Image (cartoon, rainbow over all chains, first blue to last red):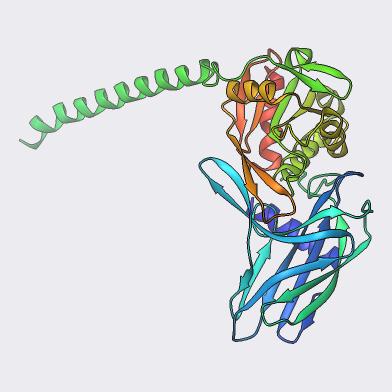
Length: 153
Length: 199
């Protein structure tokens, strides 16, 4: 499982291009999930890198393809997967936080139009100190759909 | 002197080993012959975009049954993507004997039409079904699926739905044969499906 995940992650990172940096804060392998036409929500995943000494908190995100972007987390409790809105995603100094299925993610709510495979979606993050960081995330299928990387696994 | 107490102990050890072996064999045999999921699940009928769909419609096929909702951002897409990958990876003859069935537990938002479109997006062989709150709840109870609506006035979503994320693998005779956990790999799921198809 770990191997599969790391291979998938490596593939996603290759496809997504290089990281975007703003000072000591970097965004790696951002993606937006492809959803069926007419679907009103999607999610964005990425790796947040903080090479600075101090912790940085992402408190909001914006995109023109959705009315609202919310920060969410998934927890497993009482045998259920529970999605919860969070006020911030805190990245410790010299640390990273992985936004991935089943964990932290950015929820794009109220899609203003249908997404297209491969298109780049502009996303802007807002930090607790008011600073902002913009980057583009390609629209991709959930791993597994049209994906044969697991052959012979 | 040494030999006189050595022999009975050896005999006792040998007898214990044989006894243990026999016991283990008997135990294993019991596990293999009984279906631990015998009393789980059962037939049901819910609404699809093209009319009522019953589990009984899929006799002779292996069914991967999953409960979720279409506004679910990552858990449901992950599981449906894996179900899709399992079907795609199987040799054509076996793939034709496999169906995905997606039941929405968000009966307020997910109409049969919407559920069907969502499921088919992942694979044409995944059917999406929905229904009244009572109808879906009855099926969830049959399968011991846990779900609950959680209000969040501060969210643009309004509410989310907590739910268990197990895929029920149902055999050609309509009985639950295996439970595929949310973290099962595509390879593990494929193997389980082939085993069920093999009889």
